[in-house]
Image (cartoon, rainbow, N blue to C red):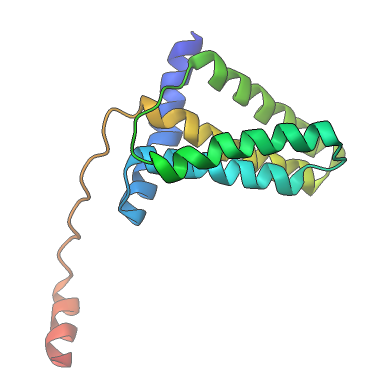
Length: 150
């Protein structure tokens, strides 16, 4: 049941987003996934409050682990697991519920940040990025305008 729901979420929500990002940037799905993970890390650092030395050391280590592969091996495939995606979905759902209860835009911003992480997690489930479709022929009126300008 959960795996069917996960597959449906991948096909319906995340694959179109990943494909659009790949086409818009002209980059591989692996680079787009790593860039989303990097954006998630940046958002986490910006939104986290109450830093202690232990937090700073842990987050610095995670930031290095996230940043180095983005620069050194951006197109290398990586794996993601279903239970890990389920954990991120649980965190996202909790954040959305808390944002409604607390009416806090900060919690909703954190939930959006988790969505970046989910994009990273769904990249390995995409079989292959289809090639970009050519643009449709412009209408007759559009062709006339183009000819008039020339």
